[in-house]
Length: 162
Image 1: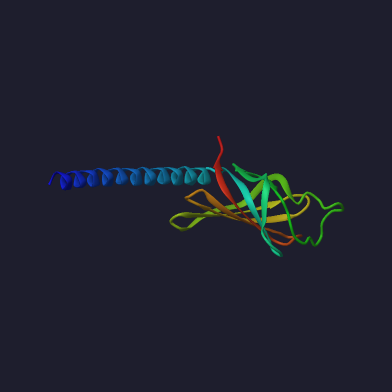
Image 2: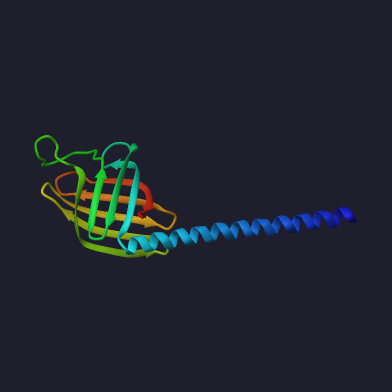
């Protein structure tokens, strides 16, 4: 009888600990989602890019620290480009490495755990249309459509700026 009572007590204690861990994990996920939501709405976030997906060919894992940073009405793009260019300056141009002002910035929420961001950037070399999906878990997908080059996509992680 004592053995059964001991086993039941141990099972209840383990179940209580497991429930507490799940609740703490849920709270951390919820806190992270709220911080990401606030950063996106304030236009103050950075996406560290891990993989590039050219329009043609295979995906390219990236080892260097490439990023896209949004701050206020400006965007700083330090992204690699793989693909076909139609009309570019001699020597290849800047590609997706620039800092400029955004226009037509829009945020929508097509799903509960996802924000969709759109904006345009025009510089002396090209005009770019950016589509960014930011998820509550901190993952992000970027699709860039330049006028003078083929489109390219990226995956990465959202980092909150200080």
